[in-house]
Length: 46
Ligand SMILES: [Zn+2]
Image 1 (cartoon, helix red, strand yellow):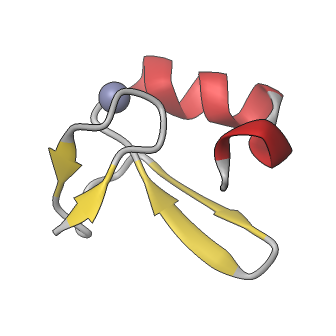
Image 2: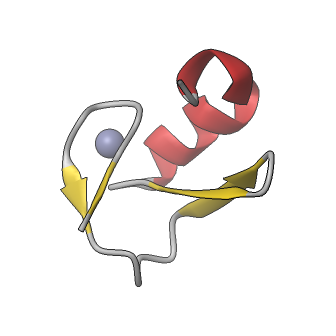
């Protein structure tokens, strides 16, 4: 399981909502959270 960095929900790695940032994969519960992350990955990736 991975943690959605936006809302803190647990998500499965096989989700289609996935982004990579600085070589690390991030997983999201919804397209909304992915969009939010993609807008400002630096802020959300730590
Ligand atoms: Zn989420």
